[in-house]
Length: 367
Image (tube, rainbow, N blue to C red; front, side, top):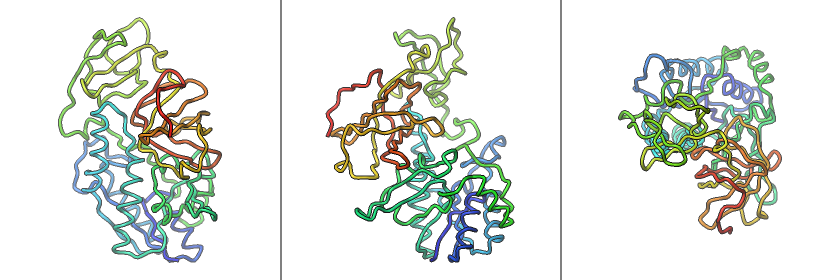
């Protein structure tokens, strides 16, 4: 079997490649560069998904390929990354939403353009990465299902929740059944220099304002009654639930409860105003056909990566969006973030949050 492996220079992707070689596969290392020729402030020359350390990570990936003994190819997707991921990132913030660039990058760049571009130059049977997730194909329907990684602490299925059937059909996750500890132990056994490397957790390690072409516009800070309490430094600097950096005095703690892209204002209030029990989401990606499911569908749902899941009911709407109603109220449901729903180990669906509501019942027409 000929397998192309996306190498980042980190322990996960390097170990995934080494494990596949150990199993007798013909393996090719492929690294995507996406910040070629871009300049960054000095304080972001540290490990992050997007930043000024790309040349260092490229050399680490090249060294990993050398240690494993596999061919190595570099594919430049800088323009595509800017056109797709950074444009999405900027437009979402300017619209008053908090984007999730990792979900969008996986959907449009890593598992679409990178795989397609790689296939043009390096024919392969499967494309593999070091993600902690699993894929299973159902015998009866032939559909590909996305499952959590066995190591729930490292599970990355949340970030993969927008992958389509055609994408799942050509990728594999060699680390899906392993724990992080087992991966590091395997890396040491293979003698990989990345075995003790720390992980890159953030999309960007600097000030997000660096990524905008023009300085952010200041605007009003209001309370829920519409009274102006102060002036903010640009809505891109805020997210729902934020308390620090508001620059206003109050006898009680105030939090960002809403961000309005139309008039570039933010609303603040006590923490009670952050509590919501339902959300709406669009761009829904279903891993099983909705017509095969019974609604309201009982699930557990995540509204951010790293947060606990919460019991909820999902109801589709005629416009393709969904209503997710939680059994208990949650804090800081954030428009723009991904909501991902599970039934046991299986990812049921994922979409992007468009709004949050106080009660469980929101006026909608289900399909």
